[in-house]
Amino acid sequence: MKASSVLMLGILAALCGCGGTAGQGGAAPAAPEVGVMTLAPEAAELSTELAGRTAAFRIAEVRPQVEGIVQRRLFTEGAEVRAGQSLYQIDSAPYRAAMARAEAGVVSSEAQLNAARLLAERSSTLAQSGVVSKQENDNAAAADRSAAAAVVAAKAQLESARIDLAYTQVRSPISGRISRSLVTEGALVTKGQTDPLATVAQLDPIYVDVTQSSTELLRLQRDFAAGRLQRAAADKARVTLTLEDGSRYAQEGSLQFAEVTVDPGTGSVLLRAEFPNPDRVLLPGMFVRARLPQGSTSQALLLPQSAVTRNARGEATVLVVDADDKVSERVIQVDRVVGNRWLVSSGVEAGERVIVEGLQKARPGQAVKPMPVATAQALNAAAPAATGG
Image (cartoon, rainbow, N blue to C red):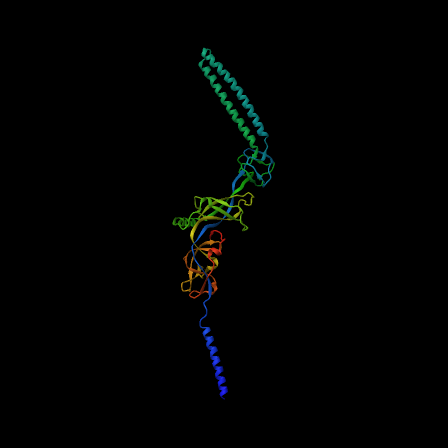
């Protein structure tokens, strides 16, 4: 009887010991580990990405300057043409005849001038002897001057005929790529007609026209005035281009000017950049995205995009760890994207610790075990310049 009692007491003691250990383990769960980054100001070059379209550097419509029948087309459609190159030949026979008449008119007027001059010289000599009256002498001098004027007029008519004859060869006003021909051989063309014969566009270099909102321009001016941004040097105002298929255009361009007025319909300002286009990759009217420099700042607070979430109201938020290692949610304002990071304008300050890893394990008010992670510079050493949103 005594042996069995001792055995029962041992079993109960063992069970009680096990139960006490389990109760102590469930009372204090360990704080979760999270990766935090301490915010520090950084230098950043700021730029903005804007949509736009390409435009020819120069464009000229080929028009006839005389009337006639088109005899030949002298170019290949879509080819490169030179300034002054003959593009069309208009029937020149009527203009050659007009030039011949004008040449004959010059010869005739010069003969009349010669006769009038000899008469005036004789009349002047005789008038000194009193053989002819002063009136007759004056008439001879006037006839001489009239004949000289007739020579000038005849030469002007000859020059006009020569110009019209030259215009029977329709030449390219600029160098560039020519469009399809809008007329064929045998067509009648007239001086001053509304429809061009063809169009020539200079494509190298080429313009890219983009628009930026006047609100953004005002904000930038305030940032420059307050010293939050420093203007980029004029020789650094380089522009890069992204094509319609998402590829990067190989050539860099330069910002040329900003329009002096705001479009009342869109509230935007036109900006124009110039790009080299030696391979004719860019054609007028293409949709592109241009990245333009805006300035630089040495006090940028940058956060990985993975650290920023949105609350139910759509506000950008981050989780901050305070000095007691407790989590709090903070609403922030993000200005633009810098590579794969956000540029933060308000809501957090330099020196604060922001959770960038293990967000799913942290809740506001919860104690955590913060573990430092790589700095933003190390995480994004190769990040491109800041881009406006």
